Length: 285
Image (tube, rainbow, N blue to C red; front, side, top):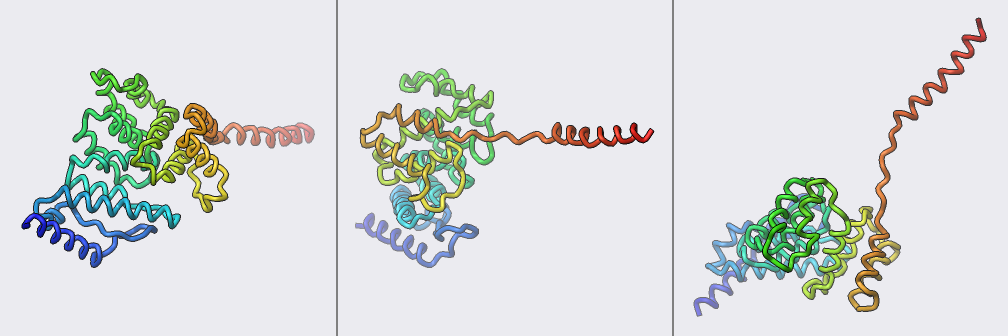
């Protein structure tokens, strides 16, 4: 009975905190309230794992609502940070945040979550890969750290680790991380049952991975978005083989145009202008 009373009291306190708390500052998205894990522990009455689950469910609910409204949900990493701070063994937030977060997302609140995942589940190469991809190809690329994260899996006794994952640390070391590996990881995640209701997040994640980082004003009218959506949906429904979808998506990769070196052009232009002047001077003689 005391156990039930403690749970009900904790839920009531959290509900009141959500209702009366000040919003997070500095974003253009829906405002949410997230207290510190150290503060929540005082009202959790020893039921940290249960409270962590409540916060995580609320975060997923708001994420789902963001898809219905067409607006991005900015706090998934923050919710996962709170939930895993309360219960570091809570596996779902690690896997979910790693799968949903775009590799080049500017919000790095997921870094601490994925870093904790590699400490709590050191044998899980997929969680490590999520973190390595974010660190190596994120807004502040650190190829050395990414290589260090994945190096330990080179000679791991785990027979389920693919060969290209064992060697991926070398790709980071020589700064040759391939889009192919990241795309393969995303397509594997699409098939996971826990991501079924959040498939839309993978459409944009794939587009950004392929180099389409422009803001999409109208998803229904964006040709690239609709193409990715059709390919992924048909793959999950079994209408198109995954290898075909993989190759067609890879063919969509946007080639980054190199910055033109105008030094030679400017020099040539100067020479062209100077030559007539020299001829004029010679004629005057």
